[in-house]
Length: 304
Ligand code: ADP
Ligand code: MG
Image (cartoon, rainbow, N blue to C red; front, top):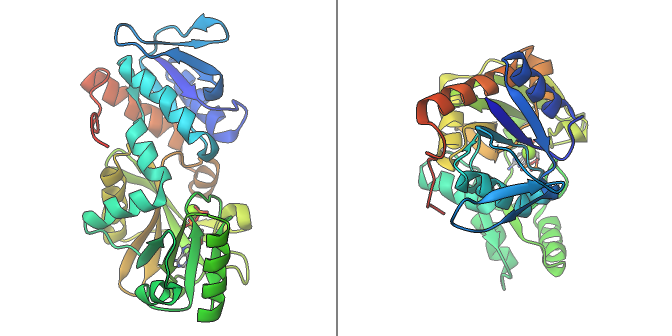
């Protein structure tokens, strides 16, 4: 097969591993910087150009689109979809996962466990918003944040009120969420490929930190997850429409709660923690799906 990887940097771990796994299996790989792709939007033979030349036909595309380039990145991916190329993750599913509120609404609709979450644009009554999610302590999140930046724990009602008002003054979109204290500063990253959790790790925030992000100094260890956690992670990925996803769960007193579904989960942490060949499993899934469906039979086609 010929496989294109949409990635801004071919030297980062995840991209290197995907190239390696694909080449090991005899595929031809090309890395395209998504921001340097340009295209013509036409109904007859749409194509993509790169550095002055048309991109030769490929069978599959692996989107590794960073949060900061979601808008243009998904447009390029849509163009590949219009050309009949199999996308590992579809543009619509990526857009859903990048909008935390949209993702949570989809998950809630399917009855998946979530922390109680409130969302507001310009509430006249911040007190009532705080009440809605059960009062302090609570977590306030910037809607477009990643890597733990923009996630704040407000321990008291007063603190919550000030932080919410400050964010609103900056015209930032936020969500307000019940704080799951019993998670103990840890979460569980479930790596979903197809309809399976192929690897899981526990991430523990450093001493005194409630955020478990590895970028914030958290550490990862191998963990065994329960059948309920496994089923929850797979359903969450399927609800968003992702073939490959990093589903983050919080262990609460009343079962697993879905916190986030990532559409370009990093490979370094999970491969290091589990010793598994995740990149290889991703390429295996592409082989299976391209063979089975041919191209372009995408699941969310036409749906928002
Ligand atoms: P980001 O997209 O920036 O990673 P997250 O929503 O994943 O934002 O939050 C970052 C971290 O903060 C999580 O990995 C988790 O450890 C902690 N966290 C987030 N929300 C909650 C919550 N409602 N209760 C307890 N801990 C939370
Ligand atoms: Mg996160």
